Image 1 (spheres, rainbow, N blue to C red):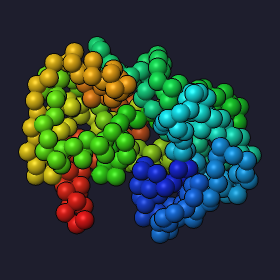
Image 2: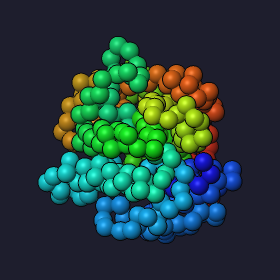
Image 3: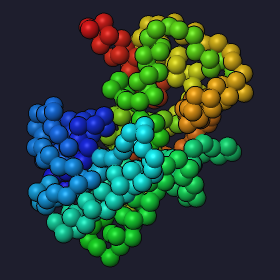
Length: 318
């Protein structure tokens, strides 16, 4: 499968995937709302999946679609119906793209979902592909509904569906909470995680890209669901320490009782951030390793330190 359409091609994961595919002689087409910055070797199609438009232009002659486009947050802070907005972006737009994929004879459709579909945290054992889905957040609900809709739609068609559920995806260009964590560590301000004893599965953008590429090419990926991680569970404190080492910064971590962190998060309406930083979420990614002969490129610790080094270099250059 040499011609690949990547939706959300100008996003954090999309840019990394497009660069890799173009460097490895794939014919890459990027679907974006607006091509502000164009990567060399990528043909861009400007189209908003949430609005009417000719998707045939994007899908014509394509062997595989990697569907990354979507929304992780509500359209605006004043949106009274966040789930409705997320459903439109993550579910309805995905099904619209799926219909065109079938019409255009696309052989494989790879949907990037979220491990939040399984739930926000783990207690006794890691999530795996057999785990019952328990999405709680609006974003996870919209992704789960998209998964169910795509499974139903592609039944009895010639298009093969592959679903990947990543946890937090990190890298020097990562947006959101990870970007804010990098900025905080760079200041060397004390961070209140000394009493947090959790284990988190996360995945570097490079490791996620390598699995996506394996799913594009490997015959055994057809019709499968994969949970993905770096394969090394790590605590929030260890994440901070690894990033700080990469930046050559001191990591000052103070002990604050968990009950106070939880109360503060509730007051600030940041309960999801509290869960992400303070609770455990572990993933068993052995299915991808066994079925697709896929292996993470490097360990979480090594890649976090590299992210810290790259971040420090960028700050120094500016």
